[in-house]
Image (cartoon, rainbow, N blue to C red; front, side, top):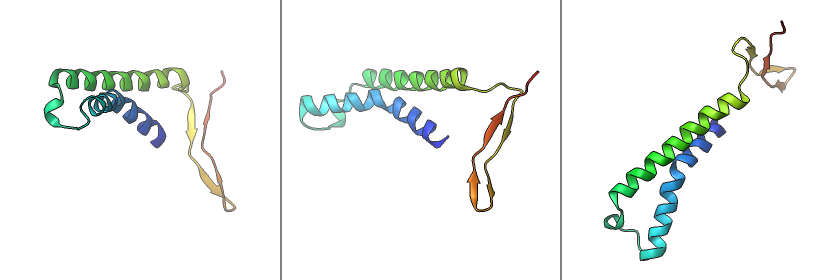
Length: 90
């Protein structure tokens, strides 16, 4: 779960990071006065929308059935048994 959150955070920050790299290459200095507020806001919105869309699509494509049961990870004789989602067969 932590990897998924980090992935979506990086996706949200990616457009702004590319813009900062562009400004650094263009002006050879990161100065807050070089940032265009309108472009910065647009990039933040694009990043957030893409992260939310990917988060939603991940749930749709790889999600389990709502009626399935989840058994969490547990230890058995010193070994960790991973958790699993058990589908209910009709």
